[in-house]
Amino acid sequence: MTDLNVDSLMGELHRYRQQSERLMRINELHSRLAGAVDLTAMIEAYSVWLTPALNHELIAYNDREKGHVHMFCSSHGPDRRLRMHEAQKALSCFSEIEDSACFTNNGFFVRTWQVEMNNSDGFLLLMRPDKEFAPEEAKMVDDSLDILSDSLFRAIGYEDLFIQARHDALTGLANRRVFEERLVPMLDNASRHGHPLSLASMDLDNFKQVNDALGHAKGDEALKAVARALSKKVRSSDLLVRMGGDEFMLALPDTEIQAAQLLANRLCETVENLNIQVPGGGKLGISIGLVQWNKDFSSEEWLQRTDEALYQAKAAGRSRVCLG
Image (cartoon, rainbow, N blue to C red):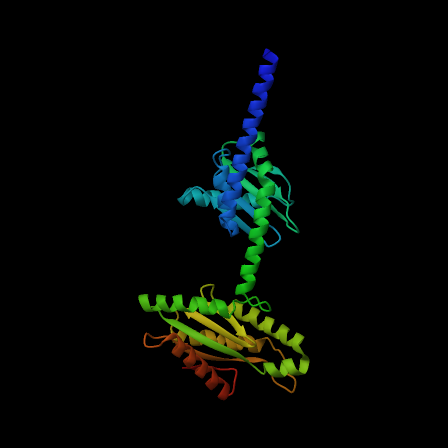
């Protein structure tokens, strides 16, 4: 065998070995991504796969269509906070989606890649200190983007379905399913730690007249306006739910009945101030039944007492708060 043939054979073997290694890495990537369902877990899985060949400290996917950023950072403590802060600054630098490179003020190199999906507007970001990303490193990401984008598309679809299943389609509030899921943990926490927990059952006054006289479209507009107004008055730790129709529930953790009553009165004023006129006279209002949980109540009894307090508010003239 001539030296030329030997060199050719060795070259073929080298290319074959490189191709085999690439296929093994691609298979590993498929396997890691298949085990991740949500976007954050998927970004982490991709980072773990990428790290042995491309060192980085932070990875992020920016979904511009929904305004969401999903990050994974391998650092901890103050280092983690610094890197996430710098990544947020870097994300704000990109007015257009394009492959780019940027050096931040605190010595971090940033590299982005456009991620192409159906009707998607997003990009991937990698960040590390002190060392720019080499062309061969960037190519590694280039070669894996098709696989990543397919998985991200699946995760985004799952996320959309998950959100739809847990939120009221009309108002965007949490739905009955979420209320039933979260009520038991709230009760457990109140019981275990002795924290106060109050519950408000709310029903719109004169809503049927709006719906019947002006049509369902106007009724829907009224429901959305009420939901927006109520949402602005409650805390992020509170649970505001549309149960169906014109019925709402509001769970108030760490809230004594006196504080809950003050809030409930403000909610009545808030709906009144929307000034939604009712055919035949008057305005749309809201009646509220309010009960603080105690350890002698079962969840069913607590809900029943709250419903009875709401009935009393309706019977007493509407647009008011009654305690149970």
